[in-house]
Amino acid sequence: MTIWRLRLFLNFDKEESWLNQMAAEGRLLSKACVLYTFSALAPGSAAVVRVDYRSSMSRLDFADYVNLFEDSGWRHLHGSRHGGPQYFASFSADANTDIFSDANSRAQRYRRSIAAYGVLLPSFLVTVLAGWNPEYWFSPPRDWYFTPGLWDKHGADFIGAFLFESILVLPRVGAPFLFAAFCLYLLAVIVYQYTLFRKARISETPSSM
Image (tube, rainbow, N blue to C red; front, side, top):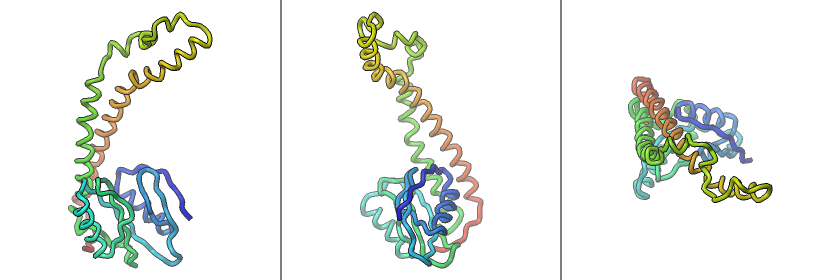
């Protein structure tokens, strides 16, 4: 039976903990991206789920990456060669098994994630600066509408024309605010994951590979 769960994780350790809890309940991850999809584990099976993060890779490099872990007993559950979180499961009886050899290699997944968010931030920031027009935003709302004679219309004619142009006004006025909010979100993620990166480098991690 397939089930879905809506979650957002920026902390890979907490994500692993939750995925392993789901596995202990007989639900193995099959897809992940805010909306997580789980399939049923065979009765009596046990799985340990681990999360890595990788930058974009060629098809060949991605195949080599997946095969490397498969040769060590890890099944690739979900992830793309275009980059992002990569999910692996081991069906070993040892719950302490890991895909990372030490604390530093475990920490590097945060470093790679920070680099990915860092690439996005400048492009969105440029978009915000290019569309920044305070005089336009703080003008009376009726000045946002360019339809000739709009405010002289009445009844259904006014409602129809008003709603039609509002479809254009909302993104024109609101998009810069949304992009600015997303820039703040990206910055917060970078700062947060940097603190996790620092903590992970000094933490003790079991070795398996």
